[in-house]
Amino acid sequence: LRGATNISVTSTSGFAPGLSIRIDQTNDVAVMFPIHHTSNSIPLFLEHSLDRLQGQYGQVHSISSGTVTLTKPLYWDYKTAFAATLYRRSQITNCGVEDIMIEQRINGATGNSGVRALMFYQAQDCWAKNVGVTNAGEHGIVIGLSYQVQVEGCQVRYAQRAYQSAYAYQVNERSTDCLIQNNIADLHSSGFL
Image (cartoon, rainbow, N blue to C red; front, side, top):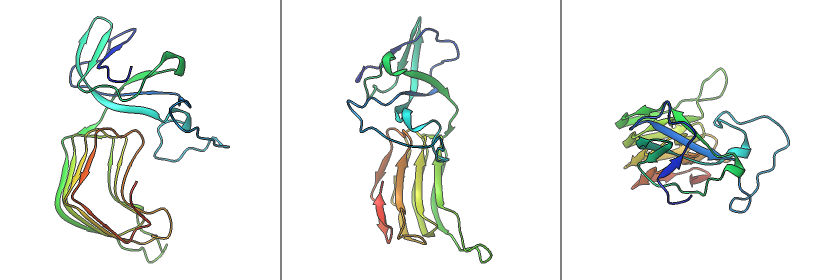
């Protein structure tokens, strides 16, 4: 239940203190706007279908018989009726990017550049500090499928495709407990998503 740190499981095999986890369930339309999609095509940044967006990442604090205890409480009411599932995760941990300038350039042959200038993907306890991004293809700094990522003192300016869905800072796909503070966003269709 929301606020709990203890999760009852049929087996604690494979879980250990310090391990990264993900918990999710099928979307509960009582607390989440229903997502309707007409095809099975799933955007590349989604691990699962659009039917399992209700979830979060976390870390195991301890294990006892039939119980996994997390370091932070659950943010949703996870229910067996919605096929709530606890997964072990492999995350990139304790990596940072600091004091650097990233400028994306357009490829003369294709007219394109990369979509994201800097992306934290399946990251835990990672950070970006004093990073400058200019001329990003669409998104400046993106956090996806991650836990406890911090972005501070960064400047993201000008998106090549700013008329589309271009975000200076984007946090998506169940990323949990991330912090974005004291940053600048300029010339994107949206500053933050």
